[in-house]
Image 1 (cartoon, rainbow, N blue to C red):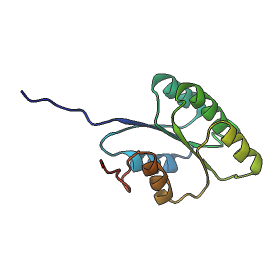
Image 2: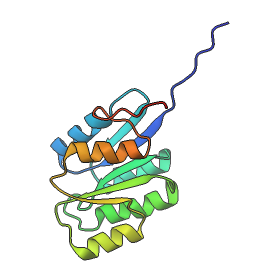
Image 3: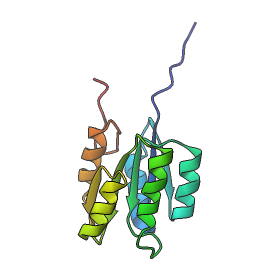
Length: 138
């Protein structure tokens, strides 16, 4: 009898309103064992969060010109994916945004442009594989 064992699935949510950055981030996490949802704006992120529990969430802070879009994503994630690692990306790293992000459960607060290797390393530290840093099974 042959038993098929499904690989562990890691759910990753990318919330980024810049198309090019969203595609690059989605590609980074598009490896076997990951399920990646990449959305543009807060309403799509809220639907995704209501549908799946995520292990890793990357969100831009400003979404579609809304200064607090990413904070609202984090607020929803805190309720719907409370165990997720949250990486915040922003081109506007002011202290208020940093404090608000940390209060809402951000694990990391990174200033754009962010080196993909940095994101890959942080993800790997939390057991999430990427195209750049596969997580070993050891």
